[in-house]
Amino acid sequence: MLHQRQQFSETGDLHPIDLVETVAETQEWDFDRVGEDQIAMVVEGQWRSYSVTLAWSHSDETLRLICCFEMEPPEQSLPRLYEVLNLVNDQCWAGSFSYWTDQKMMVYRYGLVLAGGACAQVEQINQMVAEAIVAGERYYPALQLVCWGGRHPVDAMQIAMAEAYGHA
Image 1 (cartoon, rainbow, N blue to C red):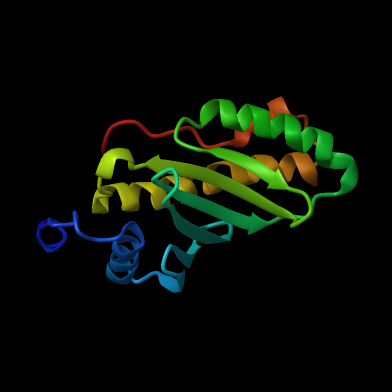
Image 2 (spheres, rainbow, N blue to C red):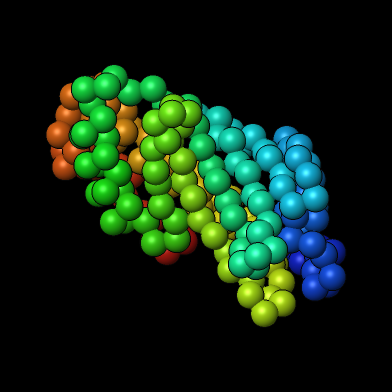
């Protein structure tokens, strides 16, 4: 870990997506540099494979993360899905979930504002990606119970794994 910090200690001159690419290489994540301002990766979770895209927006100096997975719930379950998403988002402080109906995708979104010339750090990139995957893994069972198990959203949320506090 110390070696990694020394290796990336001077990140000020790096474009945010260059930094993400360097982190992805170090973590051995499969990635594709889509363009100068965008990178796409696949990160394996317990429940799903997650498509993670990070994109740099010059206009508002924000590094945007989108983590998504395919989901095609039955039409009749959509009202319950939207209700459980409200409950989920009440528990998510760093990002939020949306369901993109046209694309049949569940999406977790987060934006890291780097206004005024602020620079992203390795720890921030790792935390952004980790938080997205942890959120997907935590709430995926509740989404499944609501959409395919017919469970009430409040009941389905009981299955969401509680956040861990402290260290083992």
